[in-house]
Amino acid sequence: MKNAPITRRTLLATSGATLVTGASGLLVPAQAQGVAPTQTMRGGSNNYRPGAPIVERIGGGGFWMTGTVRRAGDGAPLAGQRIQIWAHTTEGHERDERSHGATLTDANGEFRLEMPQIVPAFGQAHGHLAYDSGEFETVFLRPVMDSPNDTTLAAHFVLQPA
Image (cartoon, rainbow, N blue to C red):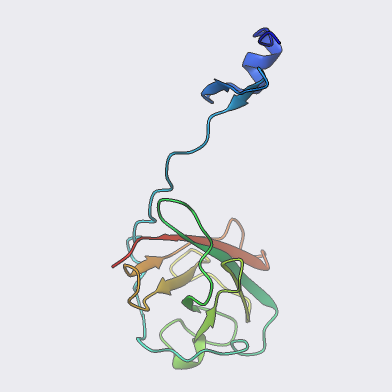
């Protein structure tokens, strides 16, 4: 069987990707060699409270903080990882104890925690998240919402062993 010809369409569809000829002779994108760890974001640890309790939700809810946690290198999902979440919301400031809570990742490395609507603080609607359990290096994230009217915000962690 001969190799498939490289056409303009093939090049456009795969631009930026390295191509490898597979056993079938078809061109396929090369696989990633490794997943880089997430770097701590400046300002992410602002108003952090070590040991915030694991909760079903923060306050009255209505807003969803979601995300994933994966291992650096192979990108495998990490189950049972503790993620702390806090923010300035319609029910409290990010420094208030009632504005903090933690959740655990599921078998797919995904987390989800309901909380009150995030509102702008210092001109930006943003959340704070932390991985701080000790098995992996501590990471603080501070994602900014596209609009203060959004009702969800996602953050993704790639962790490396401590």
